[in-house]
Length: 358
Image (cartoon, rainbow, N blue to C red; front, top):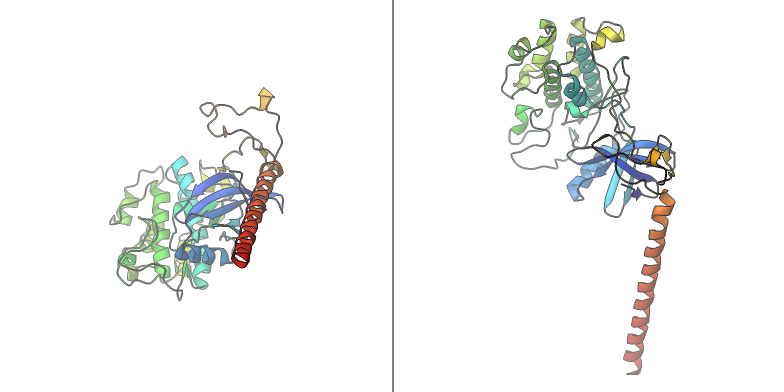
């Protein structure tokens, strides 16, 4: 917390952690607003190549969350994107358990729309899972989903960054064929993961890889049964045999729409008892929605409460303004570096004189 990248992005607090890095809430000093920023976990050739692939993606689609900028300093790099303030589908399932049928159908349709656009650009996401399905904080309004985290995405003709009889992705959402030696990423793998996400939304739990989806959905403990038409779509998406799945996301969307579950409804009927709350953690003490603030530590009314009493509030002391915190350290480092260089210069001159004049 408190580090500033490239003199612009100040780390405020971590929002989540993925396979390739940690996502932070950052304060953009140039634009005077918050953003989400993924900081690369490990610096090596393949990690950097994946990182640069992700930040270079510019997929223009209303249900795709792509990077907006990037910065690098020393051995660290990050890229920024808008903050999805409604949490994720994983959070929604954790809070409410199985989701309403029509809400699941709506979220699945938006996901398939994002995958359709992604695959049209010859990009395979390879890590579709509820944690990467981000939500706008619409409350009791109509839900809005973004597909995020393209950290291990691959192009159909891009060089492979992994070799051997293994694959990258999140266990439980990786298509069975991906474990075969020599497998190349295909859209079918993303469709399998989308089917697994739908199963999790409808049951509240992720199924075993060899589970029969139709049987599982029929036996799910729900207040409302899952219509056979939706069961058929989800089962074909998550079919273990690649040739039995839909050919592309557009085909799956067409059959999903044919179920009639996407007909316009009032938001409260679509959501049932579910509300897409703002799951973004509270800002640390000393920060406001307008960025870092100066606070008076002597005022007990603004002191940070103990974590046990208010676990969503940071107990860290308020950070001083960025310029007070970072500028002295930079000046001291500059002075120390100058002194070292001057010392080296004196030594080199002395050695040169000794060599010349004996």
